[in-house]
Image (tube, rainbow, N blue to C red; front, side):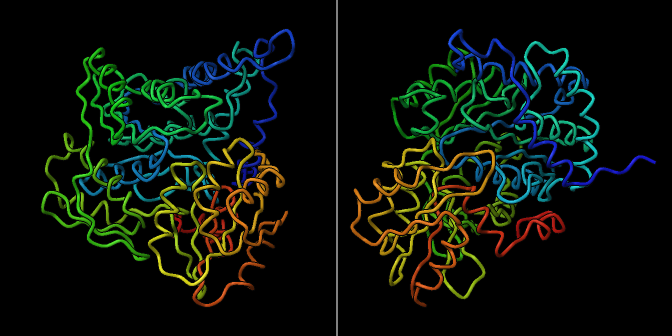
Length: 454
């Protein structure tokens, strides 16, 4: 009898896809990667695989979301509101915090580990066929996870699928879908500039690639110059578009969540930060054509959303907040919350990915800290920022004590020893770092069993 594959074997296989050799034409004569060709290939590779498995994404109704900040929270809000309105909703997000099952959800539950393993086994022969026959090579980890999601959503006959783009829009693997019901761009900031462009205008054009004929378009972007880019594209494609302004009133914003008023109705969310009210309103307006003026569904949907590592307070005697802010815009939001929060001293644990703007990110948060602990994440598929580069950046903006730890757990342990009862410990700079440290309170086994983060 053939041995049943385990969840961990499925995870190991998926993560191993990073070592699949890429086709020779990815490289120039000098052996340098062709950046443009490399990004275009994501959709081509995935398309080849999807055709082999009879295009499970066809006939699914998609709501496609991208943006520099807030796209995961908005994805969860959209999904939860639709579910509260009575629809069967699938959602796909990235990255995950602890378990890869977090990337694929049906309603408010992650895909079961057994189902993930079964779908991976089903895909393996087709991945082999891609490796042997496809001119574009074998799909990557991200593309394969997306294929797993499409199969899962088709099997479960989802009414709607809420799809969060991984990076950008036009050439992101999620843009393999041919038709979209609703396209949402939360906002545009300077992130992933090496892939998407050096200016906000260039990044906006890339993200606008998710706008397709026949869809509705919504954005919360306030920059008039950027909005004009979206407006022009929508007019060319004859797509109805709307900008969602901040016409809501914050009633409460503390560690218990956020309460706000919109259209004379009161809404509450567990998520911390005024910006989450904006994400909730954007999500509601984006699905209003589907659910109508269903304030009951919006209230229920917004109230039930939980997103880990977004100003998340840990269940601990000490005041410990995990926040995955990993670009300048997100760190500004985090810093604004910290400025309004009451505490004695701020102990800051920071780890950044190698491709992030250390100066820009640390400038926002380091001046607020009383003690700074620089560390890294242990993720084996992503490079951490050089310690020396982070330390030089931190010292530009603060003269406070700065310590370095190669082990993030040691950084947390030392910080906990140093922090007083009225102090705030903030872990930030990367979802990889916050995800690793979050496991001190919520293990992967716990998450796999509950199929939820809390």
